[in-house]
Length: 189
Image (cartoon, rainbow, N blue to C red):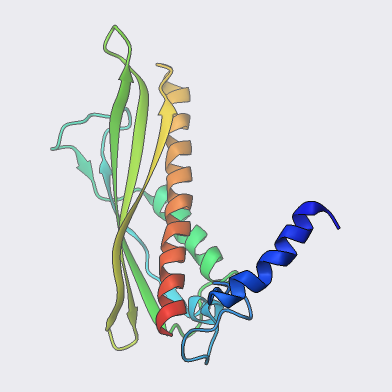
């Protein structure tokens, strides 16, 4: 057994003594002990995210240019959440519903001498709510993810960099939402 393996074996009793238990898996029951966190996550039906972003593909930063929907980013978030909560897909009879409102902003962080953007931060924010079948709000929170990318002043590469940043922020948001809902079920279910 390696030194790191021995350290992990020694940490097990210490972690269980302090009340630590895994968030996912068979040992992840909530306080009532009736169902695992995974079982509660698998019972969540995800509604299609509502989206708001800048309408200009190359970053017109005026407040008047807003689009209400970006199908690809919303789809990436939806699919990442669906796969993270229940790898078998949406439940046939969900016990909970998850609604999400997304908004995106792009901020120039580094600018060259000519005034052209060379580095930008893409921020994706999500307001999400988990409700039971009766409509009672169980979790209502806000979270965000920020990804920086380089602007090369080449239209194709700049669109690809921005789309990659959207993809990464959507996947990070999906994981953050899953963690927050899992923590709720671990403490309350």
